[in-house]
Length: 214
Image (cartoon, rainbow, N blue to C red):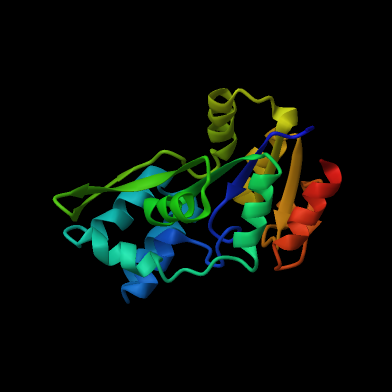
């Protein structure tokens, strides 16, 4: 088989929602002027990604972790992602999911969809409650670095990897992979640079493309 490993973005690719951080704020009804301002400062380059995450995490200090797990249980998968992942697994691919989002969706994807490996940022938890701290495993713009480590872990070369994402934040891993796919992309730059731009919202169309190139 020409390709051995497929690496997926999670938010907006495997799932229909875009940002785990904002999703929590909105579902808890606290996407207030302060949280929005943190995001604007980060996007404007006024604070680091680490600082942005720390400020967000501080909002949720003391909250029972089970409350967030319950909230993320309601996140919907992209159309036909479940049978599509099953087919890719039967085809023999190693499946990896990475996200600059949080552990709640990453852990769910690994457990429910049977991914071989999943990686994301994580909120600190002690005695079942959030500590207000965050561990940054994948910083904004660092998915290429994450993929490099994953390739070492699975002993594959760049030309043996397929990368699938939906925003410009996925460009670093798309550039490193042997074949890149944009799925229902909201990133103009990503859409232009990938090998295949899938404009469909049905993940079966991605699998069809992978079947052709494999």
